[in-house]
Image (cartoon, rainbow, N blue to C red; front, top):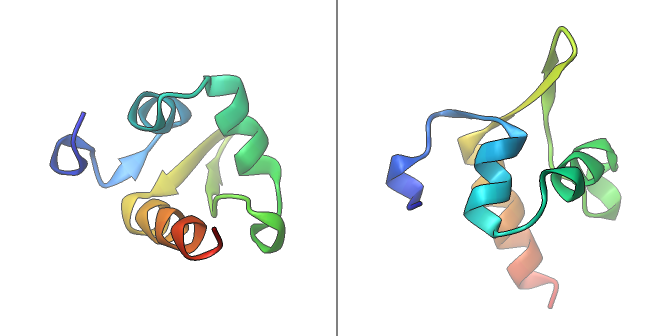
Length: 66
């Protein structure tokens, strides 16, 4: 799955597939504070969603912190 194929609003499943990690791990990242490496997200009912732009900013921050 490429960046262009991802929708503007991402689910944990989209992120898991893109990163090649488990959905469970994605949910752990969504629950963590951004200050300690979590992914910025918002909630709609019980569902967590991530803006595509925020997701790719998170990836860039991870790359910088190597």
